[in-house]
Length: 139
Figure 1: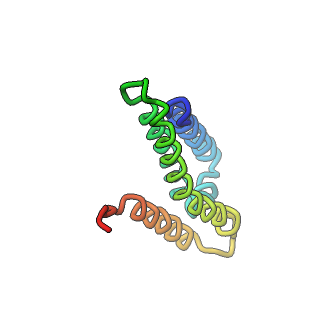
Figure 2: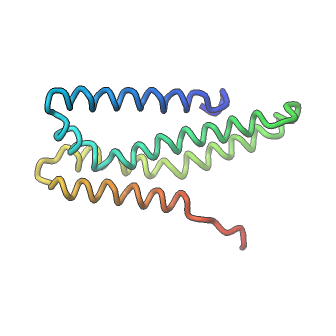
C-alpha cells in the first residue's frame, strides 16, 4: 500500500469494513450472529487492529515518499523502506499469534465463550499497549 502512498491500505480498510459488516448483518438476519461472534471474538480484535496498523504503516511510507521537495525522493526511499520493514517485523509475530487463535481457539467448542472474549480482548489490549507505549530515545 505504501508504494502508491497508502491509498491501497485505506481502500482495504473500507472493503474490510463493508465485508465484515455485511457478513454480520447477514448472520444477524438468519439468527447466526451469536455463533459468528463467538468465533470472531477470540482473534478478531487483534486481527482487526493488525489490519489497521498495516494500513497505517502503508500511509507512513506514502507520507515519506510524498514529502516535499519531491526531487529528494531517492534519499527518502530507503527511509520509507526502513519504516515499512519496522512495521512488518513488529506486526508479523502478532499476526502469527492471531492466526494460531483463529485456527485453534476460535473454532473450539470445548473452550468457553467467556474465555474467548477475555483472551481476544486481552490480546488486543496487550497489542495496543505494546504499540502505543512511549519509547525513550535515551540510550
